[in-house]
Length: 449
Image (cartoon, rainbow, N blue to C red; front, side):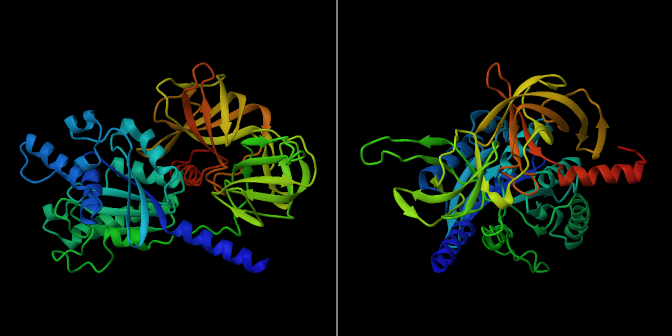
């Protein structure tokens, strides 16, 4: 049994560390799409017909060389305006690792799109124009990365060719950004001087910056550790479907199917079903039609329990010794993504994993201004792209983890019950970035929250 467990965990670790999800962010014209295009082009991840289409589009614009930014700026409106206004997802691979990247917009009004792209990212690449240095939008993107607890941040100081590849320009920007992001609580920051247009330090080391001895962007993406410690995660299985075939072959079969959101489950392990709080033991685990002794995230499995318990879609199966508390009063940081505002007293639906319940917005204690990281108390409402604290009362108990402990089971959506529109993306508990900001404002300005 122990050998099979060790092997399973090793295989899971291998699977997890060979895939890196990362997002790019930066101000308008900092070169995000060009960097992504250069990564795809120089890593030989562009198909011939794609490159031909980019070359043809570039010629129509009067450009002699292919505009690699067009590899990611896929919407017609983006191509016409030369900007990124939506999250462009791309998938590519090198011999060392597979990648899912999200090229997010730089405009202030599309902060919600960056939240979407970075919410599942293991790493964020924040671009800065070497001529402009750290600006308000740079700080905004650093704050969002900290808010979403992205574990690794790369500062890509772009357009170094336009500042004569000066080391002191890079050093000043890197020092300022690192100090700011560290104060927000970003755990790891790597600064790299690049020229996305010329290809310096993107895939190949630059001969123009011999003073820099660190990795290229691709080398860092290929080697940055992505930690998925399956043995210490809070194991969670949101029930998606109850399977009862009631056939002659399986007259008493009752299984609880879903995708493991976090951690590892083993046969014989005592479990608790939330929100009811009833307990049992895992009698079996079915995976792809086979019985297994162990299963881990993100596998889709069916759990069989020793006891006949009333379980339905939306319930959460957890280890009995590691069960989150249930509550009807949810305090969270949310990013409002809808055009219609979120107001105090508004009736909404709250979707957490596979469970959706009625709720009401009881209070909006504060709104965060990302420009200067100040807190505005009691704003009354949140509008598109706002980030703020909310208190929500739900009609039924929920078992939420803190977002600090689990980005998946600590997150939720607020939904308009009238038409199903997503209103806000929420992070349960106190966000670390917001916690740091509150204390920074209090210490510097003497405000008392």
